[in-house]
Amino acid sequence: MISDLGESAQWLREHLARQALSVAPLRFAAFALAHQRLQAMTEHLRQRSLPALHSFMSLPGPEKDD
Amino acid sequence: MSLAQASRAIRARECSAREHTEDCLRRIERLQPQLGAFVTLRADAALANADAADHALADGLWQGPLHGIVMGIKDVIDVAGMPTLAQSRQLRGYVPTQHAAAVERLMAAGAIILGKLTTHEFAFGPPVQGECGPVARNPWNSAHFAGGSSSGAAVALAAGMLPGALGSDTAGSVRSPAAMCGVVGFKPGRARIPRAGTWPLAPSLDALGPMARTVEDCALLYQALSSDSAPNRAPIAQAPLQLEWARPMRIGVLRSFFAPDSPLSVQGAAALEAALAVFAALGCPVKDVMLPGLADWNAAGMVILLSEAYTLHQQWLRNRPQHYSKALHDALVLGATLSAADYVRAVEQRQRLTAELQAVLQTVDVLIAPIQAGQAPRLEDVDDWGFLRTPSFGVACNLADHPALSLCCGFGSLGLPLGMQLIGRRGEEEQLLQAAFAYEQACSWYLRRPSI
Image: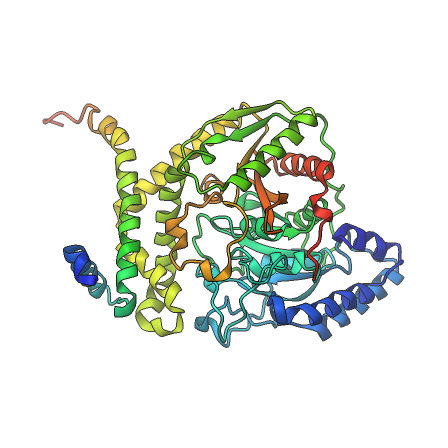
C-alpha cells in the first residue's frame, strides 16, 4: 500500500528523517493519507491568498535608481 | 441541584458545603467506574476545604456565589499539589507547586477543587485507554463518545458528579463535549480568562472556558474566572451578570455551516431549525447570513493548530517520542510537514475570515450555528485522523477570537443530546449569555438528565 503512494511517500519519509522524526511503518500509510488531506488544505489556502498576492505584486515597485 | 441552587442553599445554610461535597463524592464513587470522568480525585482535601468554607460562613464571611461549591479542573490546567498528566506519559511525575491563574480565581471566589478531569492527550489526541487515565464515556449511553477534549468535564456535569468545571478550547474542546453530553460550554474571548499554568495546545487559538449544566451556572463561573480578584484578597464586589435581555436580539443563522459540504446530520439540522423557531417565537428577528464555508475556516484552523502544536512538542518528538501515544505522536509529526509559507497563508486567511465575521455581526446580535454533526458517535467509530477528515464547527470562533457557547437543543433518535452554538460579538460575553439564557428558559432541555 505504501508503494502506491509513490514519490509523495518517499518525500515524506526523507523530509521527516531530515528533522530526526519518523512514523512507525505500520502507521505510515494512514499518515501519508492524512498528509494528503493536509496538503489539500494548504493548497486551498494558497489559492485563497493568490488575489492578495497579485494585488501586492501589482503595486508600483521602487525605481531602478532608488 | 444546579450550581446556583447549591450556592443559594449553602449561603442560606440550608445545606452545608460539607453536605454538598459529600453528595458529589457519593455520586462520583458510584459512577466513576463506568464513566471515567476523573483522573485525580482529592476527597479528603475537598472535605477539609468544605469544612473551612462552612466555618467561614458561620463567621459571616461569604466569598461569593462559588463559596463552598465543588469543581473539577481539566487535567491540562495546574492545581498545586495535584499531578497534571494531560493524559500523557510525557508528564509523568509532574506535580505543580502553583495553581494556574484561572484556578486561583476560582478558589478566591470560594470554589473547592475536588479533582482533575479526564481529557485527551495534551487536549488533542483521540481518546486512549491507558496508564495515564481512563476514557470518558457519555452518560447518556456509555458506549458513545463524550466529545473532546474537555470530555471528563462534560461527563461529570451531565452525570451530576459536579455542578461546575473548567475546560480549555482550541477548536471547540469546551463546546463540543458540552453539546454531546447535553450541558453548557462557554468559550469567552481569549483574554477574558488568563491561561498561565495551562498546558498550551496552539497558543494563538487556546482559550479557557467554564462548563456547567445551565447558562446561569456558566455565567456565575465566568464572572469569577474573568474577575481580577486574587487569592488572599477580599473579593471584588460584583453585581451578578444580568441574564434577562433588555429586548429580543437579532439572530443571524450561519447558513454556510449548514451547506451541502457540511457534516451536519438531518437530525442535527432539524433540531437547529426548531431552535430558530423558538427564537422567532420569543420575538427575535431571525435572518440567514452567509460567511465562507467550513473548508475555509478549517484550512486556516488546522494549519495554525498543527504548526503551533508541533513547535511546542518538537524537542520531545525528537528526544522521547515513545512517551506519546501513537495517535498523538503522528498527529504532531504531521505539523512538521508544514512550511512557513503555509503558516503565513493561514494567518492571512484568518484575518480575512475574522473581518467577514465581524462585518456580519454588525447586522445581527448573535449568530447561530451547528457545533456538532449530530448525536455522539460510538467510541469505536472515533477516528485518529477525524480532525482532518471531518471539519470542525468550533474552530471559527477560536480563529476569530469571538465568544461562543454551546447548549442542548434537543435529543436524537438514540436518546443522545443534540447541540447548537451561539456566537457573539467580541467583548459582548454578557449579551451572548442572555441570548442563551432566553432560549434555555423557553425550552428547558437542561431539566432532562441521563438515567444513570
